[in-house]
Each structure stands twice: as C-alpha cells, then as structure tokens.
Image 1 (cartoon, rainbow over the protein chains, first blue to last red):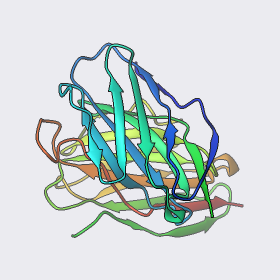
Image 2: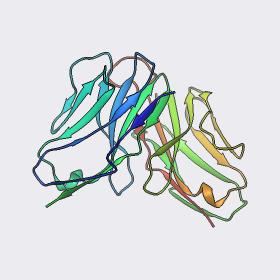
Image 3: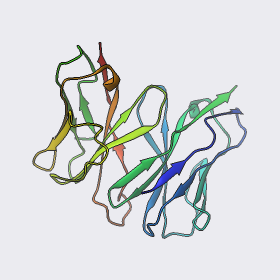
Image 4: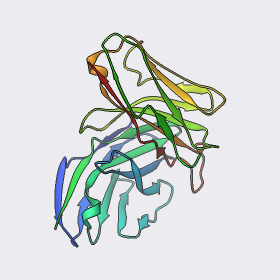
Length: 112
Length: 118
C-alpha cells in the first residue's frame, strides 16, 4: 500500500513571496503519477500540477513548479509570486493503476 | 458533459434513512472514483471503477455502503441506514484510462455532495 505524508498542516506566506509545500510518499510501484490539487473554500478540487514518475524533468505550470526527487520519494510544490487567490488547502496525491492516495493537506494562507 | 456533475449538492436526512448520491462523469472517462471528506480533513478513498467494474472496493467503510456504475457512465453511491458519522462531503472524480498520455490519471472532480445526518 502507498502512503502520502504532508508534514505541514498550515502555512502562511506574504503576497508576492515564494512558498514551498512538502510532500513525501512511500510506494513499491515503479510507474505512477503525482499531483498537487488545490481546494479553495468553494470546495471544488482543482488540479495544480502533475508529474509522471518516469519523467526526470520537474513539471512547471506558470507560477507553480515541483521538485521531484524519485529516489527520496519527495514531491514538493513551489509557489512563486504568491497571490491572494492561492489561499486554499493543497493536497498531494499519488495515483497508480487506479490506486489513489491523498495526503491530509496543507492549509495555505496568503497574507496581503 | 463538460465537467463532473454530482447530485444532490446538499442532502439532509434523518438517522436510519437510506440515501443515494449520484455522479455523472466526463464523457469518455472510463475511470471513476468516490471519496469522502470530513470537515477540514483529507480525502478518504471509498471505491474505484474502471468501466462498470470495481476492482478496488477496499475503502468502503462498512456493508452499509455500496456503489454501482452502469453503462460505463453514471455512478450511484448508496448509504443504507445512515448514521451521524456518515456526515461528510462525498466527492466523485473521473479520469481517462490509466495509461500514459497527457490526460492519463488526471482526476477531474465534481463539486461534491454534502451529506448531513441528523
């Protein structure tokens, strides 16, 4: 069975600054996908970024980028130039052949 | 449809009653997942469908919970004899088949069904 651990229950950052959310996972699978999802107070889960485990290059999506360390089973999310709209709960997720596991989430607050 | 549709968006029921929650996935998405999320908590996996088959039912918390999917499309999650601890938001997500590709394994979520058991 796989596990996903987000060790930071809450974080805050000043608007326009950079913040990194951590995520570690454990699995015996070799082919899998990792994701970061955002859940604002509206409750709608929104995909932030995706990483295929077979790709060595770190995924980027505008202000969002990941640091994927496969050997260390680490998958952190960096948010640059934080905006007030980034305030949300962020979930790290692992998916492989239909098995999905989500971390407990990190509540991020962006302060003006 | 354009997105994943869930109904009802809110359901209040009395303890002991049965409830049905519906999920209409994105057309063409063969994989469908159900999760439960208690207030301020993470997502608890319930069940996964690939087509109409449920290869992984390991997350269903008790035999009061069941789910089915028909025609490889709409799924219904049924909770019998509801208990107060069943109160939560039930989220449904769908994705393309689990193969490599730009859309593979990307879960698109519905807005959820909030269940309150009095």
